Image (tube, rainbow, N blue to C red):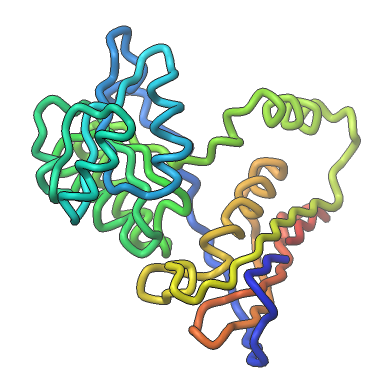
Length: 260
């Protein structure tokens, strides 16, 4: 179950669609782990970029953030100054045209991720896309196809999938030490009451499923080791028209069910 606040009174059935997970990268793609330093550009001044990803890149062995963009040039310059970033661009297009940027981190709102990831591909920039990668399966497939056609790397920013503890858990499950899996359960709860927050905007891809539920689907998919044969869920929508609470069941076949 996923919560933003006390749910609204309306309830509607919801059938989840299978969306490919962006952890697979074409092995022939342009590498993001080259021996020399990868020069990163940040597509927006999002809080997750400022507080987490930019410091992580700058503390890595082979990455450095060299440019950041915002639709507000003053904000871009302010954040660049605070974080010691060389260049601040007053538009996203300017960042993609920067010849001294090797790769892009795209932390835009969910509803804009696919659009700007496609533009990154057209600009020839390998891209780390913030979850949930896209808001629907059509857009996700289009993004994958665009990067594949350009022989560029693209990945979804699910950091937990690369954590040693996650790897250990998956190794134990796949070893068979626990026997045959019959039931999997994932949950993610978070409080959010500010209606001005983008998570309450249908146009920007708001809602609990795309913001939090993608984590539940990701880990259930990883533990099961295969895609579900069917999914059913119930959604409680709030006044803004986005899902604020959702519960679902995934049928992975062979008697294995996953729930969230």
